[in-house]
Length: 202
Image (cartoon, rainbow, N blue to C red; front, side):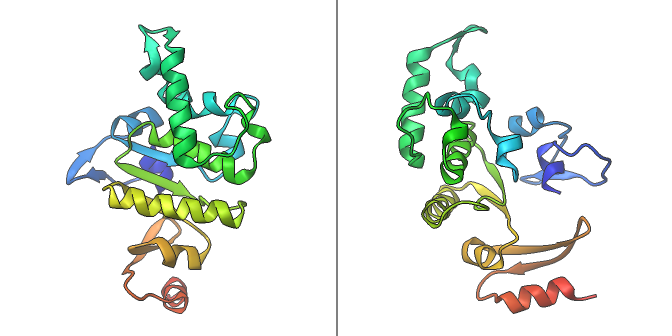
């Protein structure tokens, strides 16, 4: 479903997308970004980074036109300033922004991807398995960032296979089955048992 929302689903699907009660047409990722929808993919190495490219260049890759004179010439001073601010804000641990991002830990790669997404000023941020395969410290920092962004008014959709994570960071839990919504649960004092019972109910 989130791939349909971000315009990255290659198969056929039915349904309409509404943002703020207004129907929108999204057929590709560029159109999604135009509507301020940004996604952190599940497979960060395959879809989230260019592993041989520097950390900084990865961060500015999606918003590169914001640092260009005309269409081709990059304002390197402005780009370096943005990279420095993004690395500091997301606490990306790297001894140089020119270090190939593939040499960073999984957690720091994920934080760099988040930095890249935030430079697009999203109103809707989709996080697909955002803490899979990263250490506890990086998980905590990402949870803090999610809470901060939610307080700033960004709508955040988190897809996670870890129920404790889902219950710990969500206001509402949507239970999906075969691409269809099975239940929408308000998370006031939800338990893992309640979510599993709903998921397994015929």
